[in-house]
Amino acid sequence: MLKLLDVVKLKNDREDVGIKTSFTGTIVDILGNGEAYTVEFIDENKETIVESLYTTFSEDELVKIWSN
Picture 1: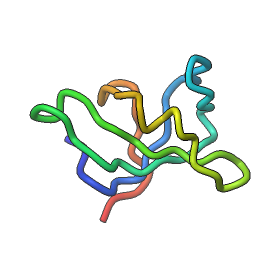
Picture 2: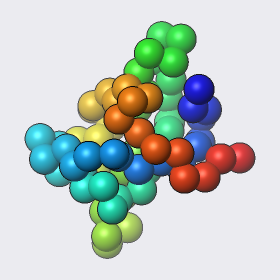
Picture 3: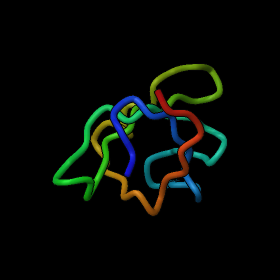
Picture 4: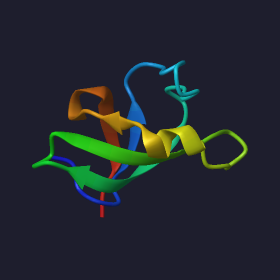
């Protein structure tokens, strides 16, 4: 299970919210009992992709690349 502040990437692009697999994100909220995650993704300019904060992601969509 993923944890708060884990750094993740998407397995596949999410064009609907403008997130590419090359972007990294930090888990900022865990919903349910790990049923969904809110992730703050940043783009290649190190700017937050605001739409990512209003989107939930399942663990199946994410790849952990770093953990505390």
